[in-house]
Length: 394
Image 1: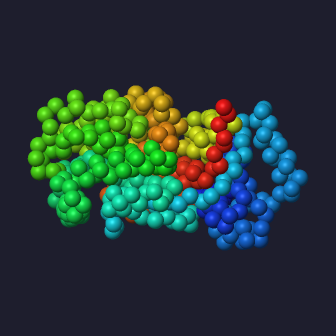
Image 2: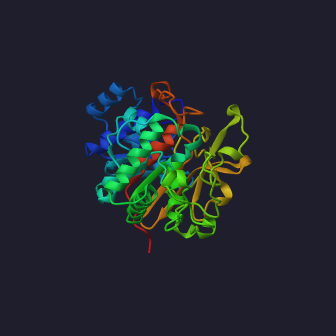
Image 3: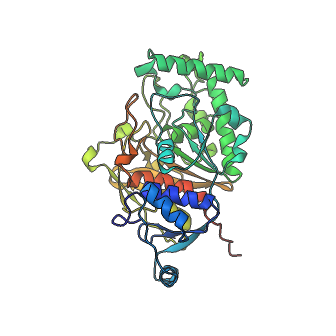
């Protein structure tokens, strides 16, 4: 999985997932040649790699032993993590097509990793218990319809989306979309606390935390929910309810395409040509979780925009790991934390290979980006739940 040896990093994750589904033994060699995968040498796997265009090397048992001994050495910042079971994947996404695409569903499809789509009805009916890993589509959990009001309130898709959301909330027994979305966010919170793995990108990151922080507080203006917001609602926000963020200021103006001060989009002044973020370096033996989540063939990854492009560094809780950042701009791009028995990862931006993706733009063709470092970070999270949990020393 290094830069020189692999011609399709993304599909390599798919072959690894496929092998796990076949109950084959897999080891993830953290920090060894870009985070390579050690698979059994079978004709079936070789054929699958050839069909999918994935580069591989056949090594002897003696060479395997030599590599594993080297990795186990205290002098090497490497680790061999056993992957046990292919995680069952759910993507939280609205029914029907949107006028924009989702990076996670694109890369899962490209890598040929199966997933199921669920939405509010299933979440509120406790269907999350059936899944090991959950991705949140670019959703607005605050009930403000993505803050698209100023630019798209007259667009047919916006009007239809608003009608559908209101009808769904009513069908599920809620007076407002914001109340229904809060109920969904709390179910997702409980899923993570109970041991689930949750991955969110773009506006699903900050809007999720904002919705939890505004439990019992009306932060929506009349064009969103038909009545005024609570007076002084900023002072009623409870940062103790959030997963990752603290001390943020909500954007009250409905005509501003922004939820809060968490997002860096309007605060950054970085040319596209120099927009990169750096992945942190962790001890693979002592910090295997962030090491897994940052495996890549480069430590420098191209930046990309989104409604929520990156996170204000000073508004991230101290117990949350910043795994990717642009230090000179004071922003975090890729963060991870523990909530109860579960884990969450937030990744800023919309599409790692489409710098300024806009509503209505065509989807990215991943055949043109088979070695994308930005997309690799998504797939690291997909395989993360498959890792064998080590017994804690007592």
